[in-house]
Length: 589
Image (cartoon, rainbow, N blue to C red; front, top):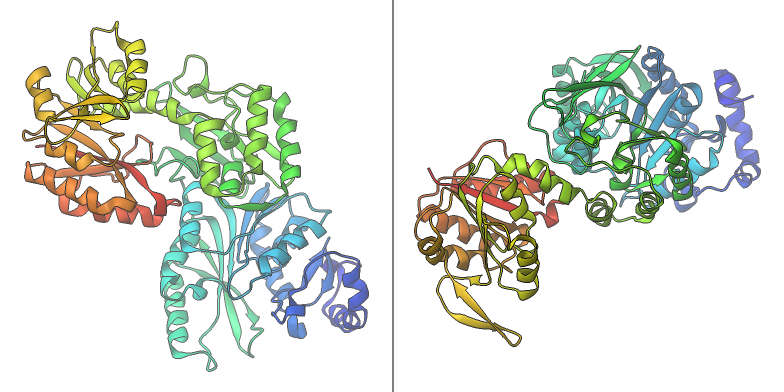
C-alpha cells in the first residue's frame, strides 16, 4: 500500500513500525540522512510515492498540507509547472509529480543553517527513479536569484512554504519576487507566537498584512511542527501576464512583447518577433523551464548524462535556431520551442543555427560547465556567437539614435572593426583609430577600399606625444586634433583604450553630440572622473548598456549625478552584477 492509499490511522501505525524497521528501510535506498548529523528533517521522506522515513518528531502535517494544496492543483486540466521554493525533502513536489501531469521544479541548496539539505534532496531525486518530471536547483535561496527567475520564467503554481520570514528585513523583496513568479502562489507563513522573538513576530505580522493587501485567500490551516499553534496557507492569484526577459541572459524588455495567456484549460505565449516588423506569433506554452535557466541557476538534477541524451534526441527535429535557449527541460525530457520563429529564417535578421554535429558538440560541452559565469561566456561567445549577431542586427537598430545617414563617426579603439561595420550599415562616414599594428592591418584589409572609412594608426591621450610599444613607435593624438583634421563627429565611441578613458576624454574641449566610453564596476572612481569631466563640458544626460548587449539598462536618460547610482542599482539586480561592465553614453543638449 502506498502513501496516497493510507488512512490517517494507518499512517500512525506505519510511523510506529518505521522506527522498528528504519535501518532496514533506509538500507534499501541510497540517500543522505541529515538527522544522523543532528539536523531536523522538516518533511516526511517519500520515494516513489511510498513513505520511507517520517519527519522529525513524527508530526503529521505533510499530508494535511498536501490535501490543501491539491485543491489548487485539481483545477488544472492541462499539464502545468510547479515551483517549490525551499523544497526541503521535496515531499510536495514528489507527490505532485506522481499524482499530476506536471513538471515540478525544486529550489533547495546547502546553506549555513542546513549545510547538507541540498545534497540530501539531490539523493532523493535520484532515489525517486519512477519519476521523470522533477528538476532540482541545488542552490541556497537568495532574493537576487528569485528576482531574476521571476523575470524570465512563468510557473503555474508556486509553493513558498515557511520561507519568506527567513529573509528578515528583506522579506518584502522576496515576497514581491515570489508573487511575480506565475499564476497561483501558495504561501505559508508562521503565526505570531509567544516563543518567537519580538522582532520576528513583527515581521510575521508585516507578512500577513502584506498578503491581505495582495487580496490573498485563506486555503486552510495546518499544525506547526515547532509549537501547538496553527499556520495559515494563503493563495495569491497573481495572474502574471508577460515575461520581463526573453531568457536568463538577456536584458529586461522595454515593453510587454512576450505576453502570456493562462487558464486552467490552456496556456499560450503571444510574442512580438523581431522580423518581419509588427508581427506576432502565438504558440503553446510547454511545461518545464528553459534549459539555459537550468544551467544559470546551477541546476543539479536531472544529472548531466540524462540531459545530454535528451539533447541528442532532438537532433532529428528540424529547427531554424537549434540552441539551448530554445530547449525546455521537462525533467528527463527536452522539448523545442520557437520552431517557426521567422526571425531565424534565411531572410531574417536573427541568423539562426541549423543542426550539425558541431552544434551538437557545443551543446554537450555547455552541459558539462558548472560555473554560471563560464556558462554565460560559453553561450555568448562559442555556442551561439550571439554577440556578433546582436552587434550586426540589434546593434544596427540601437545605434541609429545617435547619428544619421552621412554623419561622421569616430571609432576610437576600432580593434577588428565590428562596430565599424555597424556604422557602415547605417551609412555613416567613419574615422577608425587603432594604435596596435596587428589590428590596424585587420582594419586595413577589411576597409581600405571603402571610401567611407578612414583608418588611422594612432593612440589617443590628452596631449600629442610619441611613445613606443615594444620596439615600434606609437603616435598619439587628441580628440580635438582629430576634429580639427577630419571634422566634427555626430557620435564618438571610445573602447579598448586599456583603462585610459579619462585621458582620452581630457583631449576633448568641444562637445560632441553623443559620446560613449567603457566602464567597469571595479573601476567606479575612474568612471566617475570621466562623468565629471563630461559634465564640465556641458553634458547633462547619461545612460548605459550592460555587457555587450545593445539595449538600454535604464529606460530614461538621467543626470550625471545619478548615473553611478543607476549602475549600482542595476548591478544589485543583475546575476553578474559583481563583475558588471558596459558602455556609458553621454548626450549633449
